[in-house]
Image (tube, rainbow, N blue to C red; front, side, top):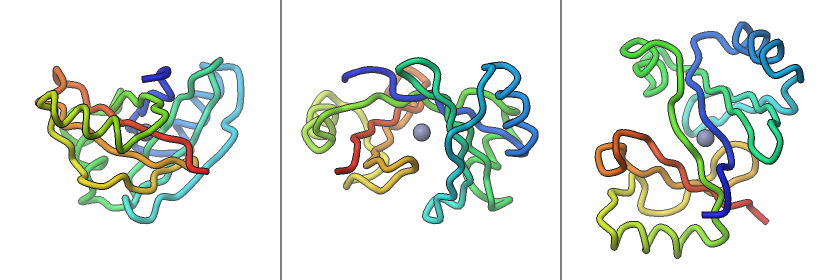
Length: 133
Ligand code: ZN
């Protein structure tokens, strides 16, 4: 793992959350992006070498909507930057971590991503992400 690439925060309303985080961080989001495959809209803020990713469901039955309904808004996942996602996925699987997708998939902000089940990762949803070239 290279660094914490971003921390994903589940939010109820992306516009309200954008305002809150703009005020909290003292800077505006550099990107808003819809991820059709996940039915979410995301908003990204830079914080030094890391980022904050706000994630808001576009589908009332989606996983983010259910998360917010159950737990309220808050930290949803931690994303680690990796150089070679396939190698890292194999390594983690061999260490006993449960991968939530078998192949890297296209995530927001030009990334290939893979999620690790929180049950096998100490209660934290982990995202591996590799910059797409
Ligand atoms: Zn993320």
